[in-house]
Amino acid sequence: MLPGKRNFKVKRTNETTGKRFFHEDNSVFIIAEVSANHGQDFKRAVQMIKTAKKCGADAVKFQAYTPDTMTMDVNTRYFQVRHAQWSGQSLYQLYQKAYTPFAWFKKLKKVADDIGILFFATAFDKTAVDLLEEIRVPVHKIASFELNDIPLIRYMARTKKPLILSTGMATLAEIQAAVDAACQNGTRDISLLKCVSDYPASPEEMNLATIPDMKKRFPAVIGLSDHSLGIGVSVAGVSLGAKIIEKHFTLSRKHRTADNFFSLEPDELKDLVDNIRVVEKAVGQIHYGLTKKEKASRIYRRSLFAVQDIRKGEKLTEHNVRSIRPAYGLDPEAIDEVLDKTASRHIRKGVPLRWDMIET
Image (cartoon, rainbow, N blue to C red; front, top):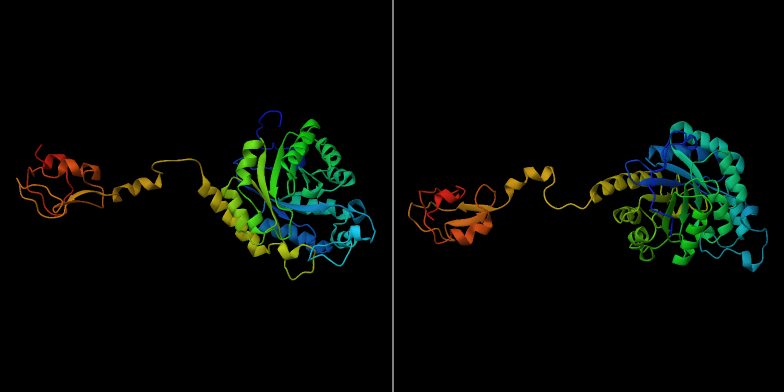
C-alpha cells in the first residue's frame, strides 16, 4: 500500500501556471480527452481546447506517442487490429492516423494556459515523458494498456509529479504493483481511475461498485475513465465517489477520426459537466434530521386537530380528533393519551389540540 495517507489537494506550483490540479474544495475534476479526435488538424486541436474550456471542463488531455514509439511497422497477423471499428489495418497504420505530432505540444499547452484550462497528456514511452517535462505539464498519466509497463511508471514517477493511473484490464495485484512502483520512485500524489478498456464500453461491464472498494483499498484519489456512450455512467460514478472523470470528446461525430464514435460532442460535454456539478452537490455528506431549508417545511407535518366542534365535557374520540396536516397541534403519537379524555373547554373545528384543552 501507499506509505501513509496523503492529502491529495495538489499545491500551487509554477508548473500549474496558477491553475490547480485537484480542486481545493474537493469538487470533481473533469478531464476532456482529445485523443485522436483532432484528426491531425492543428486548428481543430486548438478549437477543441477552447471548446473544452467553454463546456466547463477542468482539463484537456492529449496523447503523446508516435507510431514508432507505440509499435512496429509490421503487417503480420500479430499486428493486425481486430476491433470492429478499427479493423482492416495494422496497429502502425492506426497510430499513424491518430497520433498528435510532438511539435504541437508546446503550442497547444500555451493555448490552454492562455485561456485557463489545465493541459496534460498520456505518455506512452520515455521520450514522451521527456517532451511533457520540457513543456512543464503539472501531472502525468499512464494509460490502462501501459499499466504493466513498470519501467515506464518508474521513469514517470521520478518527475515527482502527480500521477494518474488508468486501471482497465488490471488485476488487484497489477494495480498494487503499479502503485508500489510509483511510490518507490518519488510520486506520492497518486490517482487511480476505474476503467473498462473497451470501445465503447458497455454499462453492464462498468462495475461502478468497484469505485468505493478502491477507495477503501488505496489511499489515493479515485476516479473514472469512462468509455461508455452518453453521460449516465460518468454521472453515476460521481454519486459513488469518483473525484476525477475522464471522457473523450469530439467537435463532431461526423468527423472521420479514430475515437469519434464513442466520444461526446460539445453539447453533451456541457451536459456532463452540468450534471456532475448537480450530482456532487446532491451527494453531500451523511446527514440525518432537518436541513436549513427543511425547517420551513416542518410546520406541514401532521398533528392533532379537532375535526368537529367539541363541547366542554365531551369525550375526545377518533371521530372528532384526527392527525392531519399542518403541525400546530400535539404530536400524532399523543393520540392514545388523548382519546377518551374530556374537553376542558369548547374546541372549535379546525383548532389544533393543546394539553390545556384536555381534562387530565
